Picture 1 (cartoon, rainbow, N blue to C red):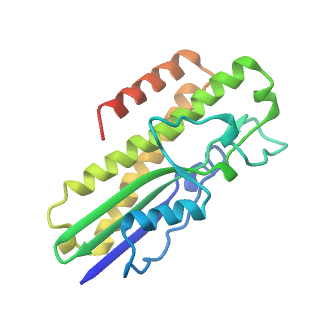
Picture 2: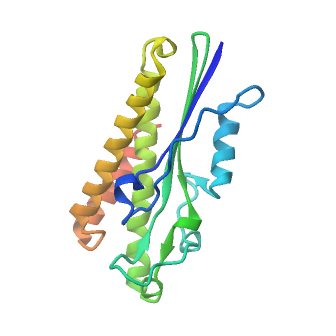
Length: 203
């Protein structure tokens, strides 16, 4: 027997004003001829998203959405954490990807027209995406460490994914609070450095 669960979980469920990436869970798809990687690539394509990559940092060209005329935020990073798992007998497969969504991400002209803001705000937004990747890796490790996951009810696996996604959202909120959305330079530098170190130390 083969079973696949597929979830799209976005931190914007609680952070829409800052990150704007709410995504509803998707129903389990058919896997008669598709791998988990195919499913995730398809969902990324449906969202016009691309996965996090150490060799592909964000640029302002990636922020293709239309910014609002009101509000104090100068830019918004939209991303989603994509999860999929499959059981075939006792064989368990799991994938987790952080995907950036250009069409829902935006930057205001006031940021682009100021040399300092252009650089510092992009660094702040990159760290949001890097933190998402940190947590995607944490989720992959958590599922890899499960004992007999295919023997667990799907609801328990879904609940674990949801708890880990909530932890990601909580850290994103703390990041914005401690750096005042990147305005406190010393705090921003500390968060960016710490996040890069966490990425370097994990897979």
